[in-house]
Length: 335
Image (cartoon, rainbow, N blue to C red; front, side, top):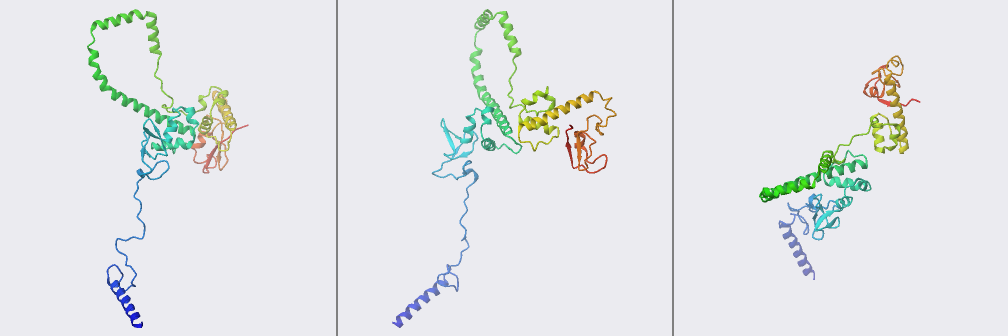
């Protein structure tokens, strides 16, 4: 029994020696220690999927069970769950949602900001300058107007060869038919009717949608009277205050903005009336020391001197009295 055990031990040791000499095992190592090869890596292979192989909405990769569909509107890739089938054409949920509004401003204003921003990002339109929901809606309407114009141009280009091909048969019309048509038109149209039609043609003007026009910012000069302030929107109120260097950061309600615009309007009217009597205001202490035209309504910080109007104060780098550096010019209201 001892001899059989020694023979088995020698057989095992001999096998280990043979394995240690093989190229797949480390030299001098144990019988079960492998030497790493040159092409072996301990990390799993990374997936080589590109951005085009992912759904734009959910971000999942396309596969046999998750097929890839191209949106007929934005031309981006979506899966079946993130797109809608319409008349044998696939449309993503974002484009389908905005198409349902017929691109009308009241219905677009009811959508979420997230949907409007996603619609613009799918068309590679930057939205960094948009601060309010109205900015996004204006951007959507402007882009839609450009798309409509581009579609009309392509339709006219496609219809041009057909019109040229159809023109030779129409040119073969005889002169007798043309004379009959002109005579019949002359009998139907009376002089009064013809004058009415010419006046309608002359008075007609092409309609340009406001979305394609560049929006003009609101200003105090656009107001006819003080009652017109009540009809302004929150955005227009903020624009008026910003153009006149009035800080509205603490205003949370619309009535607070209205109050400041009313006060600004009254003060502006006082400045206009005061400009009409420049001779009397020449020696007045309330005139701006820089332009000598407007009333002093600005405080220079941090020195606290009031010697300029708001427009001149914004341009000053140092106080004209103490020569201290101007950190900020604040518009003030006088009671």
